Amino acid sequence: MARKAGRGDHERQERTSHEEARVAETLKKGSRVTGAARDKLAADLKRKYDDGASIRALAEETGRSYGFVHRMLSESGVTLRGRGGATRGKKASAD
Image (cartoon, rainbow, N blue to C red; front, side, top):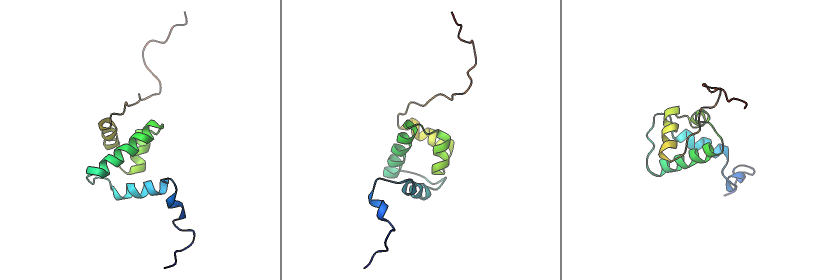
């Protein structure tokens, strides 16, 4: 059977964002994620968070809630970053 040219050729290469989007589509918001799928999702989220993605960006990308992504990262043993932005309190003195 002949294969259509050009379609699917990139799938043999390293994982693409399109493939990750399909994974996210199969894990619809509110659906229970268990077993190997949960482990895989947790590893992907951990890798992306460690590479600098925010929890909000990961939540939007996967179609899950902020709380779900936060919980998955915490369960994966990730050290969460601070919120950033302006800090309150004493200013550092220039001695």
